[in-house]
Image 1 (cartoon, rainbow, N blue to C red):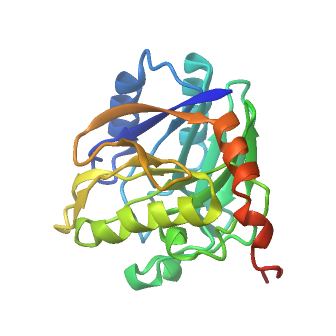
Image 2 (image 1 turned 60 degrees about the horizontal axis):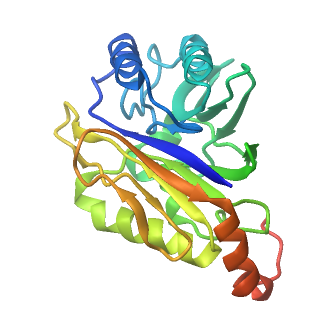
Length: 252
């Protein structure tokens, strides 16, 4: 069984959700995939002070509509307001309107995210058309214990806004997480520049369980399609069962 994954790498208009969502809708028209993966905070760019910018439901409704139109799951992170708190929330939206979410556990304190956002507390794995996905956001990529496969997923999704000066870290860690967990990794970043002058090089990619790029977008804007081969993954895990020798302890 193979699953088609669309990774969407693009520039983002700073703090303008309406413009970004309209542009994305045009770009996604006609895409044929089982799952469409967007970047972190794909509708605003990386806002560390979400007051007045955080989404209160409109982006989730947009994702539901796009998922229905494409008959595909749509995944990406959004700054949301929940009562008096703000969350960096990854939505996983299915064509039937069902939505699940993961709230970012590792907040990027170096960039000020932890001052205004509340961290999540739970790992989230979503099954979709026979493939189990671990949901993760950007900074989570640096923490291998949090991402450790416990025979509970087949692929990881990292939606990110990972700056150009640290591009080799991004590229290296995507491959490391794939190899050490014998899993596919889907990493989606942006390109372009923020008003602050911070630049993004993209490097969105789908990495297989050997650490090889099935698709690597480099710094190009657009949409790329890659395949996840679940049968091949299962066969490799059975033949080369490194996971059976993994460290046996509970994450606390």
